[in-house]
Image: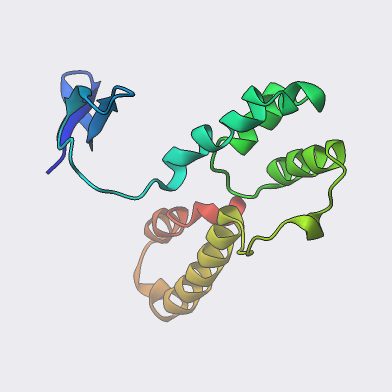
Length: 154
């Protein structure tokens, strides 16, 4: 199991524990510092994004196209495809004279919309279920139960 890297406390109680494996390697290949399993093999996934944007900065492209900190950040991070993220990506595409059709990437519903759809489905299920037993329970109980589906307001 990965080492405990960080504990977050709320008062005297541990609220969150973050585990991980970290290996810092010298350019000669020697391990300089490590926590957890320094030989662990894993996928880069989002951890690669900051490194993938480095050529944009070091090549001078960021200066050439006058990319803002927010534009560089969106290239180096994960996002949920919300409107503000999409607008930012379009702004970058405009600066480099490219169009959405020049991108070769798949599509999926943004996370926020997936949550909205899920919340709506769950709320509809709940409404059907509630109609069967609402007469037997106090409204406060139903209100508490429905409040768990507050995601529909997002």
